[in-house]
Amino acid sequence: MKLYGRNWKRDELAALVPDIAKVAGIRQLSETDGPASGARLIQIDSGGGLRVELLPDRCCDIGQVWCNDVPFGWTGPIGMSGTHSVGENTTLSGLMSTCGFDHIRQPDTDEGRSYPLHGRMARMPAKIVSCVSDWDGDDCNFRAAAEATQFVLGQATVRLEREIVVPLGGRTLTLTDRVTVLSGSLPLMAMYHINFGFPLASPGSRLTLAGKDVPDALSPDGIRTRPSGAGPVQVVLTGDGEAPPRYTLEYDGDALPCLQTLRNATDGTNLFCIEPATHEKQPRAALREAGLLEPSGRGATRVFSLHMSFDPGGHTAGYA
Image 1 (cartoon, rainbow, N blue to C red):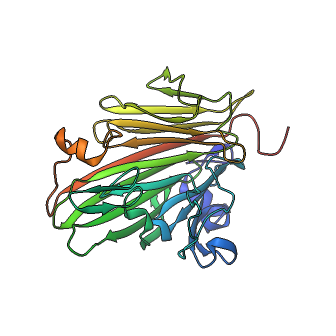
Image 2 (cartoon, rainbow, N blue to C red):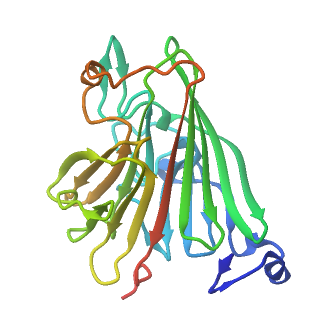
């Protein structure tokens, strides 16, 4: 693996650093103050400039991510929240929030059932199955595996098995979700709410899909949807200025055929979201009429995978 400017074999590195946790690794922590007090936190430091926070009490969603101290995710005024209620305050903070798997987007009532904003899974605390440093020859990956289950009496039960992998010395993250219907049946819906603030979100930022500019994505404010395209999809968000930071997202357009973007440039907010999804932005009733809400029965499984790359550009945060 490459670490601190050169390639190393495992034995060479072990002679200098017998415990890799001295320079990089994965730790389980907890918050002690503010709205997040009591919440669990997993921190992964790749040793290559990438630092990732995972949020077990939000189905192991992704909190803030830094690369060379440049922040990538959006953090709202109240920061991260814990397991307790914060009333009507918006607690979207973090790089990625899971939407689904019974519903996505705005609250809706369909066939006599009510569905909350973005579904129920994001509110479910996860069980951490493992946090390990996984060596394969001379390469090492930091792996966090989590499991969360949503259950509503009289409705379908859905289980999420999530794995997040960060390579030692790297600047990438791969998230793989295995979603299984344990009982009953429902249309499986998913949307990955990937949230950016300063410096990635700014008036001069640029978004590309499959190498082509998406000129209306960041201006003006609003929500827009477009087809992802079939097969492998690459979305790139580039910040403003000289040698700007850049974020790259790769996913399967057949599994997530809709790409939604959201821009809110209000003073004090400055939020831009990339949101690959299984369904277009329509009410459930309209999706059903179009034949797009086919239920999945017990044992049905869907797999979603996101590969993220982080480039801090030519600057470390806070320095000219």
